[in-house]
Structures are given as C-alpha cells and as structure tokens.
Amino acid sequence: MKRIIFMGQHGSGKTTLIEVLKGEKIEYRKTQYIDYGEIFMDTPGEYTEANDLGGALAVYSYEADVVGLVLSATDDFCVFPPACAPIANRPVIGIVTKCDEPNARPDLAEMRLELCGCERIFHTSSYSNDGIAELLDYLQ
Image (tube, rainbow, N blue to C red; front, side, top):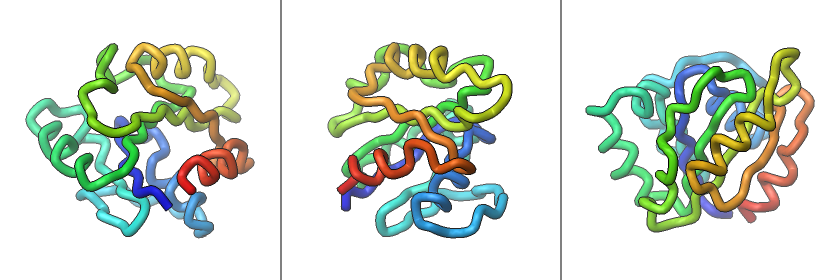
C-alpha cells in the first residue's frame, strides 16, 4: 500500500478520515505533532496554516508516496495556493471531506483543489463511508 501524508487546515477532517481508513472507531483527538504512521501520516492543521511550519510538511512529504491535500466541503476558503501541487515530486491528490454535511459545497471544494493542481480528487464522508473504498483502492 502507498504511504500517504494528509495536509489541511485544522478541523478539515484529516484525523477522522485516517481513523475510518484504518477501520477504527471515530474518536475526536487533536493532532499535536506529525503522526508518522506506517501508511497514513497525519499532520496538525497548524502546520498548513502557519508559514514558518510549512517546511516541516515539505520535509515529511518526501517520506510519502502520495501527498493528500484535504479540504472540507464546509470550508469558506482554501489554505492551499493555486498551482501548489507541481512543487511536490510525487502524486498530489485532493480529498474533499464532510461531503454529507448540511451546508456542504463539495463542488466548490473540488474546484479549489483542481486549481491547486491535484491529479485526482476524492469526495468522502467519514460517517457514511462514501468515497472511502475508492480512496483505499487508489492507495493499493
């Protein structure tokens, strides 16, 4: 299985998504440091949000086979700049989370991730498991 690093702002659903991908019970916990798992690498949202911590994401991304940019379908903005994906020397995918939320705009989140240059975009829900099998298949 390909190793993937998840990047996104705090509250975007990275940790919850990883719990679902691993088949674990969903339990909210705040990621405080880069959780360097065997397959799934979880990162604190603050690393994506703060310019002085972005270097850590760049360094750790070299340990992954795939970079996953995570954006919630309920977010009002995108923390990732346009055309950022080509900077990585590995595949960059987009993952839209919280697609089942009442005020979700997965179409808007997808457009933002397309502007980043993601080569493929997955729509997911950690509670209904929508898109989870497709993402796991991609990582095989």
